[in-house]
Amino acid sequence: MRVCVIGGGASGAMAAIMIARQGIDVTLLEKNEKIGKKLYITGKGRCNLTNDCDMDSLFAHVVHGEKYLRSALYSFTPKDTMSFFEDAGLNLQVERGNRVFPVSQKSSDVIKTLNNELKRSGVCVKLNAEVKDINATDGGFEVVTDIKTYFCDKVVVATGGVSYPSTGSTGDGYAFAQKFGHSIVEPVQALVPVLVAENISALQGISLKNVTLSASADGKVIADKFGELMFTGRGLSGPVALTLSSFINRRQNVTLSLDLKPALDEKQLDARILREFEERKNQDIKNVTRALMPDRLNTYVLKRTGIAESKKVNAVTKDERARLVYTIKNLAFKMTGLAPFSEAVITSGGVALKGLLPSGESRIQRGLYFIGETVDVDALTGGFNLQIAFATAAACARDILKIKQ
Image (cartoon, rainbow, N blue to C red; front, side, top):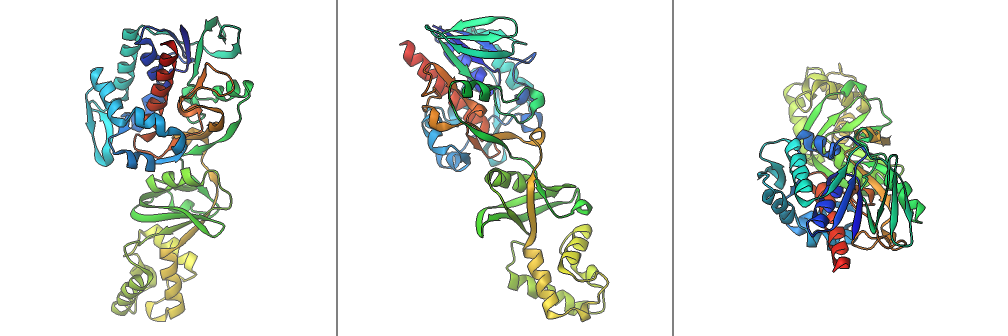
């Protein structure tokens, strides 16, 4: 049996290794000059390989495709991912949030490990080999590159999504899928800064801890997250905003609400502000409220509340104080869109799951598989997306090896 794997990222390399280890003739075609270009930049160059969590937590972090992924993730767990790399000689460590990294803190060592395993298992790796077309033949497939045509029995498409296009992720797999009759769920950015209608340029660079950001549409809360947030010149970034982006990237008319003091309810916050006012009656309000938030944010909140910064505390009305409390607890922003794919950690969308078996094999064209980020599955940060890449690769490999047997 001959197998062509298209794409030398996380899922493609893993699938090629697992299949070739069983004596199958595997050719890996990679359009770049080296494998793993996107792996190199993941985890800020440290490569968060997986998450050493229990299965309930794993599935809780899957945003799209949980049901489809159940078989793959139960069959190739985070422990299996860790064992794969440790058995291949890569030392790992578990950090905060159960995130798994190489001890060296270098993504290049992850790529080096995959390269070593590709060689050890006998995979024929062809670099600078951009696939132009896939054709079904009587006996299998022909995979056409700009240099050569490869004939094989099975094809595995692991070309990734369209996030970080500079790494070669340009959506090639979608065209291959459509040619064979598959539908594509429109790719959208995930784990990406959120753009807002309000002018928040004055807040750029401000970072906040222990805040809650929630998103709602049509009067219903979609999701809310607690943690760290950062303002950009155009919108909201940081962990809570990136996380929420994955829940709202397929929605319209989304409103974001930022709670700057989630530890206090409105009554408690009002009591605290009232105490401050009573102790500092003759001061400008901006000098009193700056104890609650950074200076530039303080100025912005007062402006949104409609209270002049220079207004004396003893002149602030009960209604104005109520507006101040409400604004601090519900600082609203209208989402206008998402930052571009070049800033997105991962792609949401891709080859529609209804056309695929749990192994990744096409229901339309048997012998053709789609795995990893090419498929309409995505998860939150913390190593979960790479775990999906490795697990879908393993599911594909098991299926091809089962066919061989």
